[in-house]
Image (cartoon, rainbow, N blue to C red; front, side):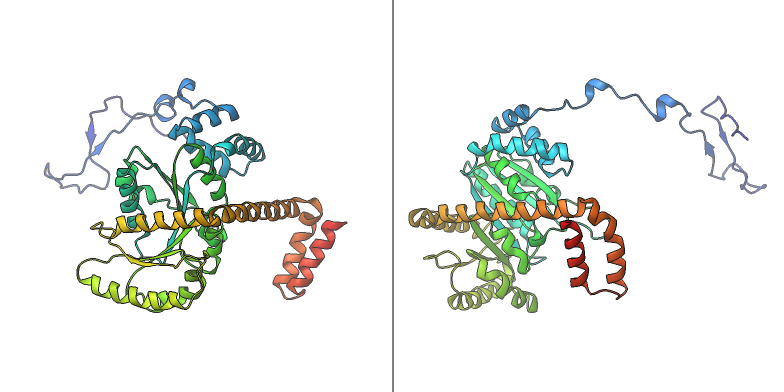
Length: 377
C-alpha cells in the first residue's frame, strides 16, 4: 500500500487528527507541508569536478616541501591509513621527504588530566609564532575502547593558535597505542619537518609508565604539572619525572601562585635525588601561567639552553641515532604482529585457542605457544 501523495499546495496548513474537536482558531498546532520528495532534493548529484584530485607520491612530496598545509594534512592521513596500497605510497613518500627532515626541535609535552596541556601549548605556540617560528602541533586524543572513535577536539581548544599562519595543528586518535601517542606519530613528525616547521610539539594523551614511547621520539621531554594534585602527582613521579628534561608547574597565577611555588620547591627537592635523563643537564622546575602568559617566555629560554647544551656535548645527535634504531625495531615488531595474525594458519586456529583460554581450558602461555608453533609450520 502506497502512501498518499502530498497535496500540491505547499502552503496549505491543516489540523492534526488529534486536535480537540472544540478547538477554536487559537489552537496553535498546525501541520505544514514540508520539503517535497524528489530524488534531486534527497540525493543531489555530486559534481565530479568538485572532488579532490588524487595525488601521486610526487604530488604529495612537492606539496609538503612547498609548505602547502592542505597537502600536508592529506599526507599525514595517507601515512595513518592501514590500507596496503596507502602504506606502500606512504613509505615511498617518506623516502622522498627524509632528506628534508631532521632540522626541527622536537618537543614532547605530557601531564596529568587537568594540567592544562592544550592551553599551555596554545600560549607557548603563540609565543613562538610571534618570534617568527613555524610550529606544528601533533595532538594525540584518546580513542574510545568501545567504538574506537576519538573526539579530536584540540583544534577547538587551540582556536587562537589555529588561526596563526605559521602554525599547524593535527589531532590524531591514539588508536589504543601505548605511551599516549598515535601509531604513526614518528612519521608525522618527519612530514612536518619536511614542510618547513622548525618546532614540532607532540601533545600526549596523559601520563603513565608507557610515556617512554614519547620520550623516545622527541629531543626534549617536558612534564606539565599543577599544584595540589595530591596522590595523582605522587603516582607519576617515579615513572615520568625520571624521563623529563624539564618540569613546568602550570596555572601559577592569582591565588594559586603560592601553592605553585610550594609545588615547585617540592619538585626541586625530588629532582635533586634523580639522575638527569640528559647527561650534564640539571632538570629544571619552572612556573608558568597559560592564561596570563607569565613564565612562558622563560620556558623557551630554558629550551634554548637545553639545545645549546645537547648540541655542544653531542647528546642531541646521539639521541637522534638511538631513536632511529628504536623506530626500526618498533616497525619490525609491528610488521611481525601484522603478519602473524594475517596468516591462514593462525586465523584457522585462533578462535578455538581464544575460547579455550577464556574458559580456563588452556593457560594463556600454552595458547600463545600453540599459535606460534602453528604459524611456524
